[in-house]
Length: 371
Image (cartoon, rainbow, N blue to C red; front, side, top):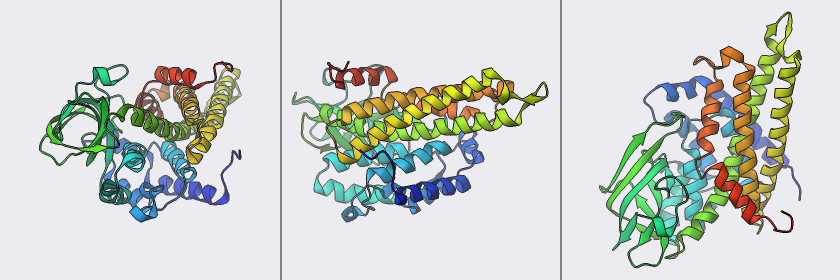
């Protein structure tokens, strides 16, 4: 395995970092955090113009046809900038679901819209705390109409398209369905979360028209495969945020003086920064493993995804917490930007299942002999 990106991928990373540095400053994040806007719409339009939403979509469906190695470097820069966009739900979840299981007509209809950013997609499967399985599903489908409620759907209040896990009344188990939110049977109720720069909603379906995605009864298997792929992409986004936290903490530690010397010269601060670096480095190693498995569609993907997900969750939370601590009393204030990354670390840690759930997946995906 070659755990490094090539020159073209490094160029994409540099361009993405420069672009987001110019167009996604902390003031843009704060505007969404403090205001009524659900996301940074102008930034979203610019990102779509850059073609990032079309990165891995095949050219025949209006995409760029690039690899997942290009997408993960973009994801990392999204996380580094703490971008207040529906990028993850639309690109990592909805687009991936249609590419993996969509019919030819579904791909022709939705992938060009998702590639251009004219449609925003998401995934809805949770109906409450804990795992969601076929036996516990209350969302049902009868005669091509869907009824039920999904909780805490990422961007459920702005999505044009929702991939929904539901049970068929025929008793064939759980399946995935596509729902166009322009249907009158779809309503969304915005909910308050720790990170208002991302948005979530409880989505209600009342006899909403739907289309089967994939095979009947294969919804849980499709969902597990989809979450594995998304876990790798979100891991890179989390890693980007963790790296920014380390940079913020380091820069503050060398500029802030106490008792006539930079606080970075004190052992306690050195230990914080060193531990952040170690956790980030380990998370990056795991994220490389995930990127390789995703890009090559390797049989190790479930293991690699769980490894990357757990490592990045831990690294991001630790870095965001210690970044605040390094800034001391200033770090806790609303005026400082440390809060953006702490909020985002907590939000991303539960978006596609909790860290504990992914730890259990990691154990089950591991070789028993190795464990």
